[in-house]
Length: 338
Ligand code: TXA
Ligand code: MG
Image 1: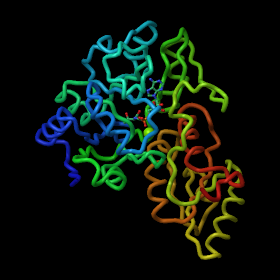
Image 2 (image 1 turned 60 degrees about the horizontal axis):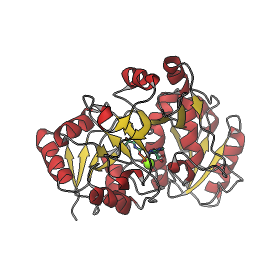
Image 3 (image 1 turned 180 degrees about the vertical axis):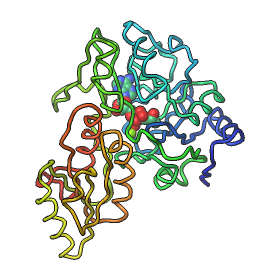
Image 4 (image 1 turned 90 degrees about the vertical axis):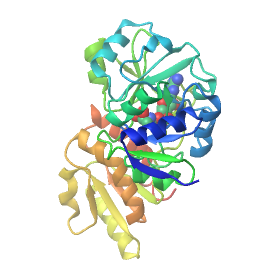
């Protein structure tokens, strides 16, 4: 199958609509990462998402709707704080998990009784949603376990030959996936951290918990138990303050003929003078925006990516750390090889 990459125009959106309503898949830009979309009412189309990505079939999908969509067509809104959060943070990178009315096909929710819903703010995504007129279920548009895509080229690298169309809406500005929030209980609970932080949610809802996933738990957000975001090269992660160790590993690697690359915040790059460094920028938002693109660049440019953690761990950094810890294993704990 030939895979077209087209900029978002009236014509390409019309083509996307035709493919989606005909049971096919289209990759679409969002403000977080690119999504691989299918009509949420079409079970056969949604099955293709799992096949194309190699995604475990017990990991449910997010339904994307446009800002005018009446959510009560799809879900039960039982807690008023959810409406306040919707008002304050959407359209945008917040996904809320409600009890489902069972309208979205069971393939998308893996037979579960809840549905994750997101209202993207990206104009390209909104145009496709408005044109299609149906909820579009979409995971990130990468091969399962690989780094999430933040450009149309990243999607092409993973999925060319497997899908007919990628809509190119430029580089995603958010850079990490949406915050996934369980709003079925009295207190909202974060299942996956992202750009809408615990502090931001608590300021509107009064409180906000973070789900703790222990290996023995029945996992509420199935995605958290799988390998994720892994670049196709060796990786090693060091804590903030361990720059000397990171530099020593870099030098050792280069000495033995390997290509190494350092990933770190701008404030740390001074510790790595004369070495190949990708700076993730200044501050949590910048790190989020740059992380996946840097990991994708790194796997091409190096045999070993050496990442240094930011010192700060709260706010947006929580989402950055979540992705970084899954993508790059701690040195000495299997991080050197995977
Ligand atoms: O920003 C995003 O959320 C991107 C863009 C494309 O919208 N999408 C995305 O989808 O990251 P995906 O499939 O890669 O991740 C969805 C996460 C998974 O961890 C999944 O387990 C969780 O959301 N999830 C989906 N439906 C759920 C549900 N009903 N209950 C709990 N967790 C759910
Ligand atoms: Mg994903």
